[in-house]
Image (cartoon, rainbow, N blue to C red; front, side, top):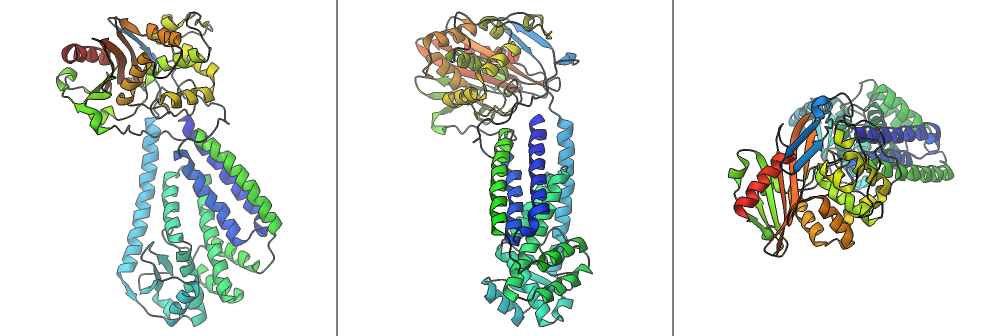
Length: 556
């Protein structure tokens, strides 16, 4: 949620910056420059979904976890040697439902508008006009002309099958007026504005809640029309006559947001007339260069910031099918949705139950803590024989957390503050670098350093978990041997048997349980991962019980 707010705040600031630039410097810009400046808004709106490429330039904004007043989030379970302590995170699902409702309403209006346009096209008839053919040749573009009794104004439509549609009353217009109309609509096709307008419609739907974004997209549409006006009078040279032509459409009101048209609202027509009045003047190339340089700089900084907080996408691990042997273990899960992966290090092959779920990435929760510890050991934040951290005195839910911790006690009691402190001492760059070095899941760290592995940006699949734990045991990460030994000692459950649970509790409900580990049998090393999903009641100890049953039954 905080990443969502941060991203939209940065986007809004950038949109405001672009609008202020155009307000105070716009009179010195050519129509093309003004149009290109607003196009950058489209790129900014796409940045949250872009791949990671940014260094750290913005401080953390913490993700909400319930540290106070939510008793259901406090859970302590002990099954045999497995203890799992965890807290809940808030999902803000109700906000997602509101956003989805708004998007649905926006798309309803989009489809309704498309039906109106389709109805106009259904009643349209092909029409041959020598003036239209001449305009097509001048601009160098192929398109078809239609007239429709249902059309209220001329418009251009069709990304590949380009059409210009005009109402019957335009057929009776003078040649010069029809020439102005045709030039404007054909230039829309030349600029690929039909496709751009559809993108604007979609972005308006996605960002329906953000008035700054919607205003910027509205201004982009206006800049698009001004740029077309500039192109049309560039071919025709009749500034006054062209202005009179578009003024006639002001009296007919606005147009549908679905299509590009020479028509427009009275407010937009006024802005276009003002722009036309400046045509032919000498635009300042120096002012244009300064503006472009400033905008490029601000755009890069904003892009880095947006990408830093970008929305996390649940992606999938793409497994090598030739290395997977499917197995039916449904009797061990007793109707619980889950998966199990056993990775044979020597054979480099996987035995997999429920491959679909096994390849789906999700938050690792506490199963990631051994790798936090290894990173801290490798960077001398802690040492194998000196790894205690003092408790800061802040009361936690669990008495086991309210004391000084070392690596063994922190791992046994799954002490969140211990591992969060290690990560913060490491710093964002070293954490990201380590994730990439060991190729852990999607390697994404966005938002808070305290919770990126708790329903945050870091996602990993069971396939990757099983291999990561096996690589930890065999030290394929090329770490210091004593550091590997310290981590393995902290998760040791028996002779040649190591594991760590993880529980995902969202809105007070335990929705996911992990149990990942490694064991050695008859000289062979196996990494394993068991995951269970549910609306409630799925936790790490339950996953551990299922894993133990499977390992005992099928792989002893």
